[in-house]
Length: 376
View 1 (tube, rainbow, N blue to C red):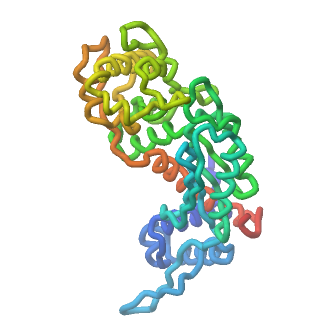
View 2 (cartoon, rainbow, N blue to C red):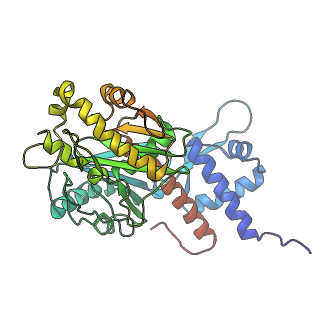
View 3 (spheres, rainbow, N blue to C red):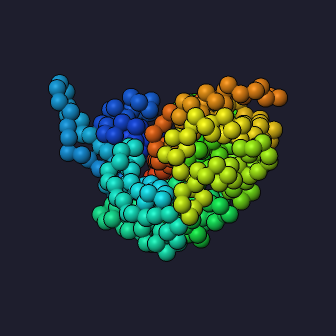
């Protein structure tokens, strides 16, 4: 049975993707360099570069090669391909970046917020920073990290009992819809942190691990078979209400340990990190028992190879030493301290770059098919 030959349209689309991927990695390349990198003939590459330039996806930088032989023109992505918005929503404020397809942060913006800010104030802050970055730079997609639980179906923030940072029913997707032409993905900051440690931190090469976020708030991310598992509604890893051992040996919710030991900030369930560290000598043995109870629950349900300790006090060497020096568990697990600074932004940024690159390639394919004329 004869094999069907790919259509000319498909071949052109495949060539265009190879060209774009090469330039995204090299930032600026000549047609000769692209041909050498992709293994595609120079005439075919030249046709692709011409199509992509006419479509407004590539642009001649005006730079030329020097030396012997005919000068070659350097091509790069057109500014019209736009940028990705990366933002994090925390009690410290809303921090945002504009990231291009080469992975460079080309602009930043920030708006103040506060604990229990509420959805209206948070929406205004998110709209403000996105609006500043969108001025003169098309936002093609957005990736948001939130220090609150996130509904995976809608991207809305979820208010759970005893959450220290209460934004309420904020809908980042709706807030950003007028400013971002493509998809808006929202996830919990702990999940983004776990992805960053998986990709370039202490969990590199580990497919099954748990990331414990131990900070003013408490959270966890579960990575299984190399992927973050979010659960049916996106609330996997909310460990504050795991039943564990209290300071007097009785059973209680993990978050209640800090109330029992007077380690909460006034009028909130947020942990007072400075007070906790100052009292390590007194409370660390009991806290290690409480943490061990949380880890045992994780071992029973998700069977991790590794437990990563993240967050401001989770990364303290004293915490790791106290956990590792405790009694043996029915099933032992390795511990490691998180290594990356601002891992939630690093994880969100990496995903945003991949999304932007895919969107640029898809746009070029649509133009090849005559579906669109100019970028949105």
